[in-house]
Image (tube, rainbow, N blue to C red; front, side, top):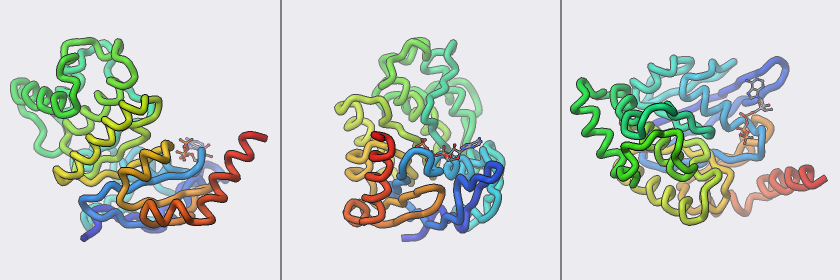
Length: 246
Ligand SMILES: Nc1ncnc2c1ncn2[C@@H]1O[C@H](COP(=O)(O)OP(=O)(O)OP(=O)(O)O)[C@@H](O)[C@H]1O
């Protein structure tokens, strides 16, 4: 299977701190690819560089073989790279439907008029299962539905590569299972997913392959089974929880 995304030697400094340092991996097209690591490991920084929100200090990002290092966020979306945010940020005074309609105008094959935008937005809301709250104000949704709205907004831009940042954070077990089912369906429809998640059970159950970051560097890469028995990964996580407990 060919790689849709290749990051090579990707590096980002904040002052003297290397938040991401010399990270290299390739994401196979059509996979769910996990990005995990203890707090502060550099996951969101790496995501932001792929999404064009943050300039790398070094290294390259290639998407479908094309060098997209340092592109602007709108260029990333236009080329098919779309992210969700860990902290969801809907337009709060707009309805759920309006929030998704806005997103349909962006991305490849963007909507060209309100009728198309509305139709497409309703389709996406039905896909994630919140079409029944389409007319509600986004601000009043409970967290579970806010996360689904965040996912719907990203999908409305028709990504080829969906960057999914802790979509299961703060959800109940049942809500998490629902979201994981949606990620699998999204993969079935041909969209590749790069997935940051703290919930280990979620990551292990849904990912085809996983990269582990620690202190900004790649610590390990492999299948969920390989990662679960990797001594360096176990130590990084136990070390973190021991430090937190202390
Ligand atoms: N804008 C910034 N300015 C300065 N330092 C930053 C900035 N963004 C991130 N950092 C630092 O870079 C490191 C990596 O942070 P990052 O948010 O990428 O980690 P993470 O793995 O996503 O963490 P978490 O799991 O807690 O979300 C941390 O030490 C963080 O404090």
